[in-house]
Length: 201
Image 1 (cartoon, helix red, strand yellow):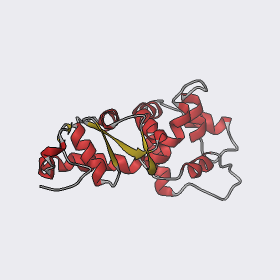
Image 2: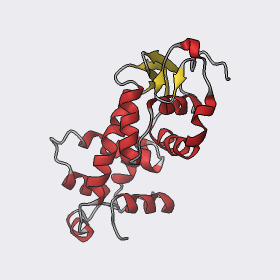
Image 3: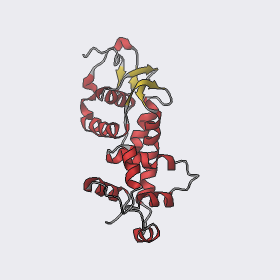
Image 4: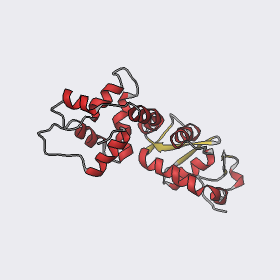
């Protein structure tokens, strides 16, 4: 039985009385799912110095469930956050974590954003003719898929940057490159973008 004050009372489905202690072996049958969750956390969440109270573990694990399309018990999600080094503050049977509110919003919006981008059947030649000065046309595609009034639009490039593991400002710079600039998107990242946008290079 592991002794850890943050996890005392944690069960598969959330916190109960701390007098119950904590037994990590209850998660032994979920190793694969834990690794899947951790891959999402690595993409989307950054540790901060303050707890975020906009969503507790139950609300966030539902977003991860939607992203990976697999049921996730609340206690298992809390335990996975702990394994990834996030701080935990109990909230009844749930918990709060030291993460950014914008990261939570991006994760919530990611499935819909990624689906819309990949299913647009865009004719890239149209944008090559229309925006001849641009080196790449990802931004033009985004503008054609998401109107200015669409609330998802503010998170599109954020989600893309998290998906490919590149700083947000760098992705914005890439998307605004003109043909006369010497900078190029690295080949591996370009290939990731092509897949995300559902394009054939």
